[in-house]
Length: 208
Image 1 (cartoon, rainbow, N blue to C red):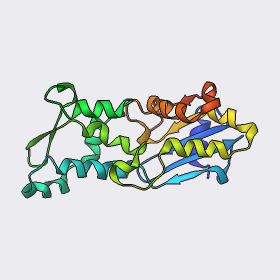
Image 2 (cartoon, helix red, strand yellow):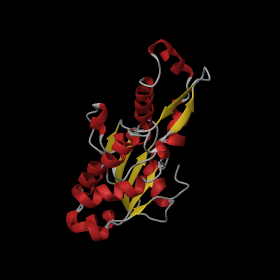
Image 3 (tube, one colour):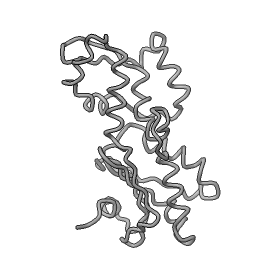
Image 4 (cartoon, rainbow, N blue to C red):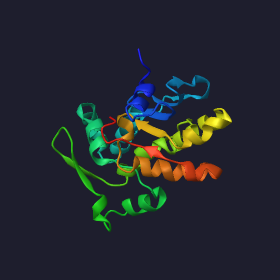
């Protein structure tokens, strides 16, 4: 059976490149040369959509009276995560603004709980997916995805590095957050040093 990362790469018309595949359970970073995975330079993280859903649920708990926490057992956290959360390109600055949502109403989203009560969320919308770029905000000891990509490319043979930087492919539902590819590019530019001119990220709209 064909490897999922290879399949994602093929879907873009490429046979060589590096794939970031992030789903609900696992995130994989895999360099591929002419259709063959380079396993020794690949990374697999147990940091993916499930972690984000659990983190969102944890943050929402602070919005609910302690006596009512049990209603979260019937709450579709994943649905609201996918609908309301997005990646910030300027996380620190935007997070400060979101936490002052009384002054910045555009950050506020209303969430209806299973008992029909309504809560408002604001900073959680960018805090949750930030976990992929900065796992330590929830005390998770994982390497951020941008660093995994950079390490993976640095480990491939020298004559493949430029081609890898030029063919970074995103795949999986956990990469579908708005501005994901823009933020990843921003982070990788800080790491790419001499390869910044070669950096290219392919994020097909139908990649889910």
